[in-house]
Image (cartoon, rainbow, N blue to C red; front, side):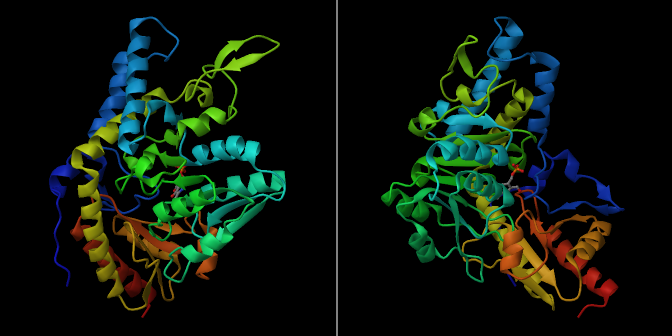
Length: 413
Ligand code: PLP
Protein backbone atom coordinates (compact mmCIF):
# COMPACT_ATOMS: atom_id res chain seq x y z
CA UNK A 1 0.00 0.00 0.00
CA UNK A 2 1.30 3.41 -0.96
CA UNK A 3 1.92 6.08 1.68
CA UNK A 4 -0.21 9.10 0.97
CA UNK A 5 1.50 12.48 1.16
CA UNK A 6 0.90 15.82 -0.50
CA UNK A 7 2.36 19.31 -0.26
CA UNK A 8 -1.13 20.80 -0.73
CA UNK A 9 -4.07 21.50 1.56
CA UNK A 10 -6.51 20.14 -0.99
CA UNK A 11 -9.60 20.60 1.16
CA UNK A 12 -8.81 24.31 1.41
CA UNK A 13 -8.12 24.53 -2.31
CA UNK A 14 -11.42 22.86 -3.16
CA UNK A 15 -13.28 25.72 -1.50
CA UNK A 16 -12.05 27.90 -4.38
CA UNK A 17 -13.95 25.75 -6.92
CA UNK A 18 -17.72 26.21 -6.53
CA UNK A 19 -18.59 23.59 -9.14
CA UNK A 20 -16.97 20.77 -7.19
CA UNK A 21 -19.50 21.04 -4.35
CA UNK A 22 -22.49 19.37 -5.92
CA UNK A 23 -24.12 15.99 -6.11
CA UNK A 24 -24.58 14.11 -9.37
CA UNK A 25 -27.28 11.43 -9.35
CA UNK A 26 -27.33 11.85 -5.57
CA UNK A 27 -23.57 11.22 -5.14
CA UNK A 28 -20.80 13.75 -4.50
CA UNK A 29 -19.26 14.84 -7.80
CA UNK A 30 -15.87 13.24 -8.48
CA UNK A 31 -14.45 15.19 -11.41
CA UNK A 32 -11.77 13.17 -13.21
CA UNK A 33 -12.10 14.64 -16.70
CA UNK A 34 -9.51 17.37 -16.32
CA UNK A 35 -7.64 16.58 -19.54
CA UNK A 36 -10.80 17.48 -21.48
CA UNK A 37 -11.31 20.68 -19.52
CA UNK A 38 -10.53 21.67 -15.97
CA UNK A 39 -12.75 23.54 -13.49
CA UNK A 40 -12.43 27.23 -12.74
CA UNK A 41 -11.56 28.82 -9.41
CA UNK A 42 -13.61 31.76 -8.09
CA UNK A 43 -10.69 34.08 -8.89
CA UNK A 44 -11.15 33.37 -12.62
CA UNK A 45 -14.94 33.64 -12.54
CA UNK A 46 -14.68 36.93 -10.61
CA UNK A 47 -12.08 38.39 -12.98
CA UNK A 48 -14.43 37.78 -15.91
CA UNK A 49 -17.39 39.15 -13.99
CA UNK A 50 -15.37 42.22 -13.00
CA UNK A 51 -14.48 42.88 -16.63
CA UNK A 52 -18.11 42.80 -17.71
CA UNK A 53 -19.46 44.73 -14.73
CA UNK A 54 -16.76 47.44 -14.56
CA UNK A 55 -14.33 47.64 -17.48
CA UNK A 56 -15.95 46.24 -20.62
CA UNK A 57 -14.71 48.00 -23.72
CA UNK A 58 -12.79 47.13 -26.85
CA UNK A 59 -9.01 47.21 -26.62
CA UNK A 60 -6.19 49.07 -28.37
CA UNK A 61 -8.47 51.55 -30.15
CA UNK A 62 -10.01 53.85 -27.60
CA UNK A 63 -8.76 56.84 -25.66
CA UNK A 64 -11.55 56.68 -23.10
CA UNK A 65 -11.10 55.34 -19.60
CA UNK A 66 -12.87 51.99 -20.08
CA UNK A 67 -10.85 51.18 -23.19
CA UNK A 68 -7.65 52.06 -21.39
CA UNK A 69 -8.57 49.79 -18.50
CA UNK A 70 -9.49 46.93 -20.84
CA UNK A 71 -6.31 47.35 -22.84
CA UNK A 72 -4.21 47.45 -19.69
CA UNK A 73 -5.84 44.29 -18.29
CA UNK A 74 -5.49 42.46 -21.63
CA UNK A 75 -1.81 43.35 -22.03
CA UNK A 76 -1.18 42.59 -18.37
CA UNK A 77 -2.53 39.07 -19.00
CA UNK A 78 -0.10 38.71 -21.91
CA UNK A 79 2.74 39.73 -19.57
CA UNK A 80 1.57 37.11 -17.05
CA UNK A 81 1.72 34.43 -19.74
CA UNK A 82 5.19 35.63 -20.71
CA UNK A 83 6.44 35.28 -17.13
CA UNK A 84 4.62 31.95 -16.71
CA UNK A 85 6.42 30.45 -19.73
CA UNK A 86 9.62 32.38 -18.98
CA UNK A 87 9.52 33.82 -22.50
CA UNK A 88 12.06 36.54 -23.17
CA UNK A 89 9.54 39.15 -24.35
CA UNK A 90 5.79 39.79 -24.20
CA UNK A 91 5.71 40.20 -27.99
CA UNK A 92 6.53 36.48 -28.26
CA UNK A 93 3.08 35.68 -26.81
CA UNK A 94 0.33 35.50 -29.44
CA UNK A 95 -3.22 35.25 -28.14
CA UNK A 96 -5.31 32.66 -30.00
CA UNK A 97 -8.45 30.60 -29.35
CA UNK A 98 -6.61 27.55 -28.07
CA UNK A 99 -3.96 24.96 -28.82
CA UNK A 100 -5.75 23.91 -31.99
CA UNK A 101 -5.69 27.40 -33.42
CA UNK A 102 -2.06 27.91 -32.34
CA UNK A 103 -0.95 24.83 -34.27
CA UNK A 104 -3.03 25.76 -37.31
CA UNK A 105 -1.51 29.24 -37.19
CA UNK A 106 2.00 27.79 -37.40
CA UNK A 107 0.99 25.33 -40.14
CA UNK A 108 -0.62 28.09 -42.19
CA UNK A 109 2.21 30.61 -41.75
CA UNK A 110 5.54 28.91 -41.09
CA UNK A 111 4.37 25.74 -42.86
CA UNK A 112 3.10 27.43 -46.00
CA UNK A 113 6.18 29.64 -46.25
CA UNK A 114 8.83 27.01 -45.59
CA UNK A 115 7.51 23.60 -46.62
CA UNK A 116 7.82 22.59 -50.26
CA UNK A 117 7.16 19.46 -52.31
CA UNK A 118 9.24 16.56 -51.01
CA UNK A 119 9.97 18.24 -47.65
CA UNK A 120 9.11 16.50 -44.41
CA UNK A 121 7.33 17.31 -41.15
CA UNK A 122 7.89 14.95 -38.21
CA UNK A 123 5.29 14.27 -35.51
CA UNK A 124 5.03 11.36 -33.05
CA UNK A 125 2.65 8.42 -32.77
CA UNK A 126 1.02 9.79 -29.62
CA UNK A 127 -0.31 13.09 -30.92
CA UNK A 128 -3.78 14.55 -30.43
CA UNK A 129 -5.64 15.07 -33.72
CA UNK A 130 -4.90 18.80 -33.33
CA UNK A 131 -1.23 18.06 -33.86
CA UNK A 132 -1.81 15.65 -36.75
CA UNK A 133 -4.49 17.03 -39.03
CA UNK A 134 -3.05 20.56 -39.59
CA UNK A 135 0.25 18.96 -40.70
CA UNK A 136 -1.55 16.42 -42.86
CA UNK A 137 -3.49 19.23 -44.56
CA UNK A 138 -0.28 21.19 -45.11
CA UNK A 139 1.57 18.16 -46.47
CA UNK A 140 -1.28 17.35 -48.85
CA UNK A 141 -1.34 20.91 -50.14
CA UNK A 142 2.44 21.09 -50.56
CA UNK A 143 2.98 17.47 -51.61
CA UNK A 144 5.26 17.12 -48.59
CA UNK A 145 5.63 14.03 -46.40
CA UNK A 146 4.39 13.55 -42.85
CA UNK A 147 6.75 11.30 -40.87
CA UNK A 148 5.66 9.68 -37.61
CA UNK A 149 8.14 8.77 -34.88
CA UNK A 150 6.99 5.51 -33.25
CA UNK A 151 6.29 4.69 -29.59
CA UNK A 152 6.87 1.48 -27.64
CA UNK A 153 4.29 -0.66 -25.81
CA UNK A 154 4.53 1.54 -22.73
CA UNK A 155 3.65 4.57 -24.82
CA UNK A 156 7.16 6.07 -24.80
CA UNK A 157 8.71 7.82 -27.77
CA UNK A 158 11.48 5.76 -29.40
CA UNK A 159 13.99 8.55 -29.42
CA UNK A 160 16.61 6.82 -31.60
CA UNK A 161 13.94 6.12 -34.21
CA UNK A 162 12.89 9.73 -34.01
CA UNK A 163 16.48 10.83 -34.58
CA UNK A 164 16.74 8.56 -37.62
CA UNK A 165 13.77 10.35 -39.18
CA UNK A 166 15.54 13.74 -39.09
CA UNK A 167 16.95 14.54 -42.51
CA UNK A 168 17.97 17.39 -44.79
CA UNK A 169 14.30 17.47 -45.89
CA UNK A 170 12.88 17.96 -42.39
CA UNK A 171 11.33 21.41 -42.06
CA UNK A 172 9.63 21.09 -38.66
CA UNK A 173 9.17 18.74 -35.70
CA UNK A 174 5.84 19.00 -33.84
CA UNK A 175 5.19 16.98 -30.70
CA UNK A 176 3.18 16.94 -27.50
CA UNK A 177 4.98 17.50 -24.24
CA UNK A 178 2.37 15.33 -22.50
CA UNK A 179 0.06 12.85 -24.25
CA UNK A 180 -3.62 13.36 -23.45
CA UNK A 181 -4.47 9.71 -24.13
CA UNK A 182 -1.55 8.01 -22.34
CA UNK A 183 -0.07 10.57 -19.97
CA UNK A 184 3.44 10.06 -21.38
CA UNK A 185 5.79 12.98 -20.80
CA UNK A 186 7.94 13.27 -23.92
CA UNK A 187 11.66 14.08 -23.64
CA UNK A 188 11.09 17.41 -25.35
CA UNK A 189 14.47 18.87 -24.36
CA UNK A 190 16.33 16.01 -26.10
CA UNK A 191 14.08 16.23 -29.15
CA UNK A 192 14.79 19.97 -29.44
CA UNK A 193 18.55 19.37 -29.13
CA UNK A 194 18.49 16.70 -31.84
CA UNK A 195 16.36 18.80 -34.18
CA UNK A 196 18.36 21.98 -33.62
CA UNK A 197 21.62 20.18 -34.42
CA UNK A 198 20.15 19.89 -37.92
CA UNK A 199 18.70 23.40 -37.93
CA UNK A 200 15.10 22.16 -37.63
CA UNK A 201 12.64 24.16 -35.47
CA UNK A 202 10.36 22.43 -32.96
CA UNK A 203 6.74 23.14 -32.05
CA UNK A 204 5.62 21.82 -28.66
CA UNK A 205 1.95 21.08 -28.03
CA UNK A 206 1.74 21.97 -24.35
CA UNK A 207 -2.04 21.54 -23.95
CA UNK A 208 -1.59 18.81 -21.33
CA UNK A 209 1.71 20.04 -19.95
CA UNK A 210 1.24 23.72 -19.10
CA UNK A 211 -1.50 22.98 -16.50
CA UNK A 212 0.57 20.33 -14.72
CA UNK A 213 4.32 20.93 -15.07
CA UNK A 214 6.67 23.85 -14.69
CA UNK A 215 7.26 25.01 -18.28
CA UNK A 216 10.24 27.11 -19.27
CA UNK A 217 10.41 27.78 -22.99
CA UNK A 218 13.94 29.17 -22.72
CA UNK A 219 15.26 26.04 -21.03
CA UNK A 220 13.38 23.83 -23.49
CA UNK A 221 14.63 26.11 -26.26
CA UNK A 222 11.59 25.15 -28.36
CA UNK A 223 10.67 27.48 -31.21
CA UNK A 224 6.89 27.40 -30.72
CA UNK A 225 4.84 26.39 -27.69
CA UNK A 226 1.03 26.13 -27.64
CA UNK A 227 -1.46 25.73 -24.81
CA UNK A 228 -5.18 26.27 -24.06
CA UNK A 229 -6.70 28.47 -21.36
CA UNK A 230 -9.52 26.09 -20.50
CA UNK A 231 -7.20 23.24 -19.50
CA UNK A 232 -5.25 25.49 -17.13
CA UNK A 233 -8.28 26.44 -15.01
CA UNK A 234 -9.05 29.44 -17.24
CA UNK A 235 -11.94 30.09 -19.63
CA UNK A 236 -12.71 28.34 -22.90
CA UNK A 237 -12.03 30.17 -26.15
CA UNK A 238 -8.55 31.50 -25.39
CA UNK A 239 -5.10 30.05 -25.73
CA UNK A 240 -1.52 30.95 -26.39
CA UNK A 241 1.07 30.53 -29.07
CA UNK A 242 4.58 31.32 -27.93
CA UNK A 243 7.07 31.81 -30.75
CA UNK A 244 10.65 33.01 -30.73
CA UNK A 245 10.54 36.67 -31.80
CA UNK A 246 13.01 36.21 -34.65
CA UNK A 247 10.85 33.45 -36.13
CA UNK A 248 7.52 35.21 -35.64
CA UNK A 249 8.89 38.30 -37.32
CA UNK A 250 9.65 36.33 -40.47
CA UNK A 251 6.14 34.92 -40.77
CA UNK A 252 3.32 36.29 -42.89
CA UNK A 253 0.05 37.12 -41.11
CA UNK A 254 -2.41 34.32 -40.41
CA UNK A 255 -5.69 36.20 -40.85
CA UNK A 256 -6.47 39.69 -42.16
CA UNK A 257 -8.62 42.28 -40.42
CA UNK A 258 -8.58 44.97 -37.75
CA UNK A 259 -5.66 45.41 -35.35
CA UNK A 260 -3.21 43.35 -37.42
CA UNK A 261 -2.50 46.27 -39.77
CA UNK A 262 -0.36 49.39 -39.65
CA UNK A 263 -1.82 51.13 -42.74
CA UNK A 264 -4.50 50.12 -45.26
CA UNK A 265 -5.18 51.50 -48.72
CA UNK A 266 -6.95 49.73 -51.56
CA UNK A 267 -3.57 49.29 -53.19
CA UNK A 268 -1.59 47.95 -50.27
CA UNK A 269 -1.72 47.04 -46.60
CA UNK A 270 1.24 47.13 -44.26
CA UNK A 271 1.18 44.95 -41.19
CA UNK A 272 1.44 45.59 -37.49
CA UNK A 273 4.39 44.37 -35.41
CA UNK A 274 4.33 41.02 -33.58
CA UNK A 275 2.31 39.78 -31.78
CA UNK A 276 -0.52 41.99 -33.12
CA UNK A 277 0.21 40.94 -36.70
CA UNK A 278 -1.32 37.56 -35.73
CA UNK A 279 -4.26 38.91 -33.73
CA UNK A 280 -6.80 40.07 -36.32
CA UNK A 281 -10.19 41.18 -35.01
CA UNK A 282 -11.56 41.61 -31.51
CA UNK A 283 -10.23 38.85 -29.29
CA UNK A 284 -11.96 37.20 -26.33
CA UNK A 285 -10.90 40.06 -24.04
CA UNK A 286 -12.70 38.74 -20.95
CA UNK A 287 -11.30 35.28 -21.64
CA UNK A 288 -7.74 36.58 -21.84
CA UNK A 289 -8.20 38.45 -18.56
CA UNK A 290 -9.62 35.25 -17.06
CA UNK A 291 -6.58 33.35 -18.32
CA UNK A 292 -4.35 35.89 -16.57
CA UNK A 293 -6.29 35.26 -13.33
CA UNK A 294 -5.89 31.48 -13.81
CA UNK A 295 -2.15 31.88 -14.19
CA UNK A 296 -1.98 33.98 -11.03
CA UNK A 297 -3.99 31.29 -9.29
CA UNK A 298 -1.83 28.29 -10.25
CA UNK A 299 1.34 30.26 -9.58
CA UNK A 300 -0.04 31.09 -6.13
CA UNK A 301 -0.27 27.36 -5.44
CA UNK A 302 3.07 26.72 -7.14
CA UNK A 303 3.59 24.58 -10.25
CA UNK A 304 6.08 22.44 -8.30
CA UNK A 305 3.44 21.73 -5.62
CA UNK A 306 0.84 20.98 -8.27
CA UNK A 307 3.13 18.53 -10.05
CA UNK A 308 4.10 16.86 -6.76
CA UNK A 309 0.48 16.39 -5.60
CA UNK A 310 -0.65 15.09 -8.98
CA UNK A 311 2.28 12.67 -9.05
CA UNK A 312 1.21 11.25 -5.68
CA UNK A 313 -2.35 10.93 -6.99
CA UNK A 314 -1.09 9.17 -10.10
CA UNK A 315 0.90 6.62 -8.09
CA UNK A 316 -2.00 6.03 -5.72
CA UNK A 317 -4.61 5.73 -8.46
CA UNK A 318 -2.40 3.49 -10.60
CA UNK A 319 -1.84 1.11 -7.70
CA UNK A 320 -5.54 1.07 -6.83
CA UNK A 321 -6.60 0.32 -10.40
CA UNK A 322 -3.87 -2.26 -11.02
CA UNK A 323 -5.37 -4.33 -8.19
CA UNK A 324 -8.64 -4.69 -10.12
CA UNK A 325 -8.79 -8.04 -11.95
CA UNK A 326 -9.33 -7.73 -15.70
CA UNK A 327 -8.24 -4.08 -15.80
CA UNK A 328 -5.31 -3.06 -18.00
CA UNK A 329 -3.75 0.39 -17.95
CA UNK A 330 -2.90 1.75 -21.39
CA UNK A 331 0.13 4.01 -21.14
CA UNK A 332 2.71 2.97 -18.59
CA UNK A 333 5.59 5.28 -19.44
CA UNK A 334 8.32 5.84 -16.89
CA UNK A 335 7.73 9.59 -17.14
CA UNK A 336 4.01 10.14 -16.79
CA UNK A 337 1.63 12.95 -15.91
CA UNK A 338 -1.77 12.50 -14.24
CA UNK A 339 -3.63 10.46 -16.82
CA UNK A 340 -4.87 6.92 -16.18
CA UNK A 341 -6.32 5.34 -19.33
CA UNK A 342 -7.59 1.79 -19.02
CA UNK A 343 -9.59 -1.00 -20.57
CA UNK A 344 -11.63 -3.57 -18.67
CA UNK A 345 -12.19 -7.12 -19.89
CA UNK A 346 -15.64 -7.66 -21.32
CA UNK A 347 -16.98 -4.12 -20.81
CA UNK A 348 -17.07 -1.35 -23.40
CA UNK A 349 -15.60 1.96 -22.16
CA UNK A 350 -18.89 3.76 -22.87
CA UNK A 351 -20.68 1.39 -20.50
CA UNK A 352 -18.00 2.01 -17.89
CA UNK A 353 -18.45 5.76 -18.29
CA UNK A 354 -22.22 5.49 -17.98
CA UNK A 355 -22.08 3.43 -14.79
CA UNK A 356 -19.43 5.69 -13.28
CA UNK A 357 -21.60 8.71 -14.07
CA UNK A 358 -24.39 7.12 -12.03
CA UNK A 359 -21.87 7.01 -9.17
CA UNK A 360 -21.19 10.76 -9.60
CA UNK A 361 -17.81 10.11 -11.26
CA UNK A 362 -16.97 12.06 -14.43
CA UNK A 363 -14.43 10.33 -16.69
CA UNK A 364 -13.99 10.41 -20.45
CA UNK A 365 -14.45 7.42 -22.71
CA UNK A 366 -13.59 7.05 -26.38
CA UNK A 367 -10.54 7.65 -28.53
CA UNK A 368 -9.68 10.99 -26.87
CA UNK A 369 -9.03 12.64 -30.26
CA UNK A 370 -6.06 10.32 -30.62
CA UNK A 371 -7.31 7.57 -32.92
CA UNK A 372 -3.79 6.57 -34.05
CA UNK A 373 -2.91 5.90 -30.39
CA UNK A 374 -5.90 3.56 -30.13
CA UNK A 375 -4.79 1.83 -33.34
CA UNK A 376 -1.25 1.48 -31.95
CA UNK A 377 -2.65 -0.43 -28.95
CA UNK A 378 -5.22 -2.27 -31.10
CA UNK A 379 -8.18 -1.06 -29.03
CA UNK A 380 -11.18 1.03 -30.09
CA UNK A 381 -11.30 3.20 -27.00
CA UNK A 382 -10.29 3.59 -23.37
CA UNK A 383 -11.77 4.98 -20.19
CA UNK A 384 -9.63 7.87 -19.02
CA UNK A 385 -9.37 9.37 -15.55
CA UNK A 386 -7.36 12.58 -15.71
CA UNK A 387 -6.21 14.37 -12.60
CA UNK A 388 -5.97 17.90 -11.27
CA UNK A 389 -4.48 19.35 -8.09
CA UNK A 390 -7.96 19.60 -6.52
CA UNK A 391 -8.47 15.84 -6.74
CA UNK A 392 -8.13 13.74 -3.59
CA UNK A 393 -6.98 10.24 -2.76
CA UNK A 394 -10.54 9.49 -1.58
CA UNK A 395 -11.81 10.32 -5.06
CA UNK A 396 -9.50 7.69 -6.50
CA UNK A 397 -10.86 5.19 -3.96
CA UNK A 398 -14.33 6.15 -5.23
CA UNK A 399 -13.17 5.49 -8.80
CA UNK A 400 -11.89 2.04 -7.85
CA UNK A 401 -15.19 1.27 -6.07
CA UNK A 402 -17.10 2.56 -9.11
CA UNK A 403 -15.20 0.17 -11.39
CA UNK A 404 -16.11 -2.62 -8.95
CA UNK A 405 -19.74 -1.60 -9.41
CA UNK A 406 -19.28 -1.78 -13.21
CA UNK A 407 -17.99 -5.32 -12.83
CA UNK A 408 -20.93 -6.31 -10.63
CA UNK A 409 -23.40 -4.99 -13.20
CA UNK A 410 -21.69 -6.51 -16.24
CA UNK A 411 -20.62 -9.70 -14.50
CA UNK A 412 -17.04 -9.16 -15.65
CA UNK A 413 -14.23 -11.14 -14.07
N1 PLP B 1 -3.31 18.82 -27.85
C1 PLP B 1 -3.55 18.02 -26.80
C2 PLP B 1 -2.45 17.13 -26.29
C3 PLP B 1 -4.81 18.00 -26.22
O1 PLP B 1 -5.05 17.19 -25.19
C4 PLP B 1 -5.82 18.85 -26.73
C5 PLP B 1 -7.18 18.82 -26.16
O2 PLP B 1 -7.58 17.89 -25.52
C6 PLP B 1 -5.50 19.69 -27.79
C7 PLP B 1 -4.25 19.64 -28.32
C8 PLP B 1 -6.51 20.62 -28.36
O3 PLP B 1 -6.82 21.61 -27.43
P1 PLP B 1 -8.01 22.65 -27.72
O4 PLP B 1 -9.22 21.82 -28.05
O5 PLP B 1 -8.14 23.39 -26.43
O6 PLP B 1 -7.57 23.50 -28.85
